[in-house]
Length: 373
Image 1 (cartoon, one colour):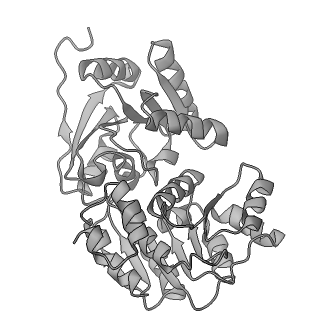
Image 2: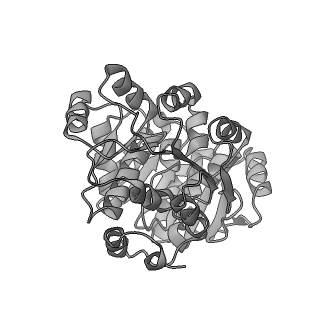
Image 3: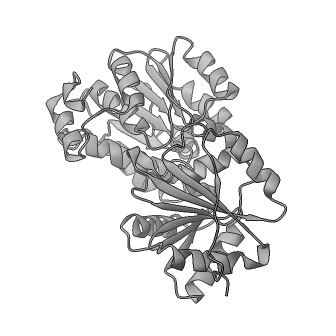
């Protein structure tokens, strides 16, 4: 099925055509018709296979464009994902009068209140700021017709369950809901049973299973040689753009500084930097003005950054599932990618746990004999 064949408005088809959306990905093919028919949906699919369009296109179609009232609400776990989803929705609705507002903490709440007063159709935001606006009386949810929980398992990981329920209880009982995630566990199913018991379950694939498009490799290295190996790896493979993962924010900052001192264009991104700096770094990386972005797990979920060929795990993640969220930043939208993990001596068990979760092989990478000379 192609987007142009969907029973949607010509204005939205024009927006999708501008994005060069043609054929539907499996998750879109399975869920968009259900959502257009008013069904509630629980959708699971590999990161980068079009979940935003899967819920975004039907959401826009349900909006009464003529009414300047809030009709759609999308909850996301992070500011970055909220901004990305908002950008996508605006692009789909480019030729409609629909207004999308992004709300999140760390920036002026007054500016967001002013935008709400002007009238918006869809709000995309993080639970904390949405509750803040609700408690101030600036946000009214009584007109919401469609509610989306994006990256639901991540929101639960971050302890947002009470916030989510607080928000859900302030929306109309009669509404359409959809819940989306790369991994669906018992917690997300429990939440869905409580608020959308009649939902259609569409499980296309999970991140931990479908990684065939990614060339996964690992290098055994002594911890004291890691930086030297990383630098020579970048040079040896001609890596001109990569996302490099560390475990801790201090490690990310330190590695970025060492790379800069060695003459490489690098910046760190993690949960403790300012929103302004975070957005500046992300934009520079997306626009290819930044060569190396060193990140903590913050960037492993939800960020839609196109054409990252290389993911480098400078530190192997403690949680084996996080490995798949990390490497899911590459091979997006049907493209291929390379994920290289530096494995210190003593970290073999972590690597084995990761390997046990996937049907694809993580290949040992053999370096040239003179690599470290």
